[in-house]
Structures are given as C-alpha cells and as structure tokens.
Image (cartoon, rainbow, N blue to C red; front, side, top):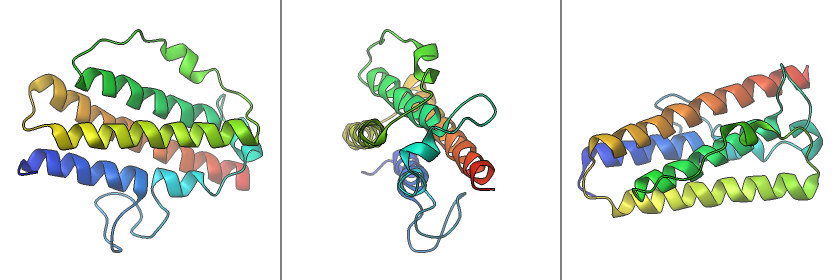
Length: 153
C-alpha cells in the first residue's frame, strides 16, 4: 500500500481493535490488550449484560459490529437497509451469544481491513466512511472501558 492516508487509517483501526504495537500508541494506552478485542476478551457474558446508564457492553459491542457492517457496504458502494435502533436492543447475552458477538465483530473488522488493502485511492465518500469508522469505534472503545470501571467498582 503506497497511499499514506490509507496506511494511517489502517494503523489507527488496528490500534483501536487490536491495540497498539510495540508499546507505542497514537491514542490508546501503550500496553497490550488496550484495544477493543483485548478489552472484550476479559469480560464474561454476565459482565457484558450488566446495565450501565441505560445500555450494556453487549449492546455497545453489537452496535460497533453493526457500524462496521454498514461501513463494509458503503465501501462496496452499496446502500444497506439500516436499522440503527435494532443494534441497541441487546440487554442480556449468554456465553454462546457473547462469543458469537465477539466473533462477528472480528469478522466485520477483518473484512474491513481486506477492503482497505484493495483500495488504491480515496474519494470523499470513502474517506468520510473510514474516518467515521475510526472515530465511531474509538468512541465505543472508550465507552466500554468506562462501563467496565462502573461494573467493577
């Protein structure tokens, strides 16, 4: 990939989801496990189902997956049928569903990285989509980390 903007997008997405590399960070804690996947893997289904300020970590996780799903459609220059409210309806998850949510989040993230690798350049629509994914995912990573503090007190 020879496009500096696409390389930066990929770097920031990887930090958001996988965590920073080599004890260096652009905006998360500079330590292993501080990305979304490392944060979520420490949680049980019971933890993910505890309500905090009207939502759950399970809902935050599924909503983040849903946003990636929508972004993947946009990068294909397709318009998905969206139901944002449905992405917030999760209140309780069991162990199997919690594992499924995390797997599906990983799948959408992997799909997104593959799409980025196939891009040569960015138009305004794709730029907005990818920058939106970074901002949106980083926001939910922060929200989830704050919710964990609330449920672990």
